[in-house]
Length: 462
Image (cartoon, rainbow, N blue to C red; front, side):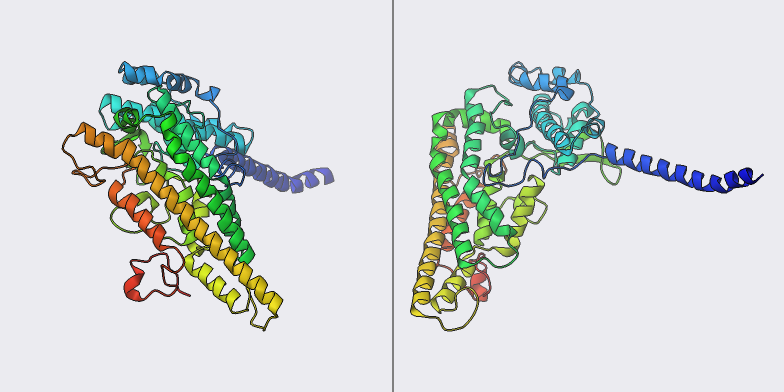
């Protein structure tokens, strides 16, 4: 009798334990089935690899049929059989595949590779079929991959360059296209010292000391200078006529809003979006350098994708770094000038006590080093933008003029020339170069009057 009473008393506790266990199991199952956003594992900015991934996402056996089509894509594009080939593609349950991954890094590698594969296949399909609806066999896994990596589903700089460093994925199979992607990777790798300096500067909680600020500016200058020196080497393996006549069209956006079959928006309506093109202007390097230096850009020529905080084409860690730099602008003209003024007044980086001759001399040397570092940074950035403009002339403007006899030789033409990312080249390039020149010390006031603020967006209040 006593034993029966004890068993009855224990029953509710056992039942509660069982229910709790079931709840935990269900919660774990739901968590495992939810697509993981793990982009911090691959895309953390680094002094070693810049904005390139720590590990390149390899081809995935779990995407076997789609991977096979990607390797055959140039052939399928050439003989206009993309539509028929994709009709045989099975639909991959990507969320389940991601949930089955053993580690977050494995899941991210799979998601990034899926984003690349389906981006190339999707754009080839839309161009080959001249429709604005993606079949669910591409649309559903591509949308899931984009959600998992925290970016918009589109053919972007990540898919064509950052996650495609050997240029293995191509639309044409031409060596020129492969070299085009590979050379951008070399430029990104050259930027690594600048990216490392930017990451360190953004991570410091307080204002940078004169020494820290000088080192950050020097690191940025080294990286940007190396990038500028590499730009002209595009001509080594990618011909202007091939780029303008073939590759440029492959990277361009899709006109009109594309429906993703089998995907629903948050309100239950069919998911549709405008698919923009891939462009070197989508690299985070130059926007981060501009943000660090406090160089602002505005006007009708600006790319919409760089406005605001959405930045949907960037891996989340790149996006976070850019937003931190925008919020602080630790290397801006105003900050550098104020630091130089403090050093010149003998107050150093902190106090206001009088200093001796030796300290005053050291402060003067620090001020001069800081001024030189800032000047080197602006000079390197200006050189990069001039080299970029020269490439645009060779690869877009001159071939465009040759294809349309009688058009002007300047950047301005009718209709205006656009980059693959959608920017109007005239204002986009010349405006950035002008803003860079204006950012030099002595060219922009630390306290701009209200009337000058619009033309000097990088100047900050003292």
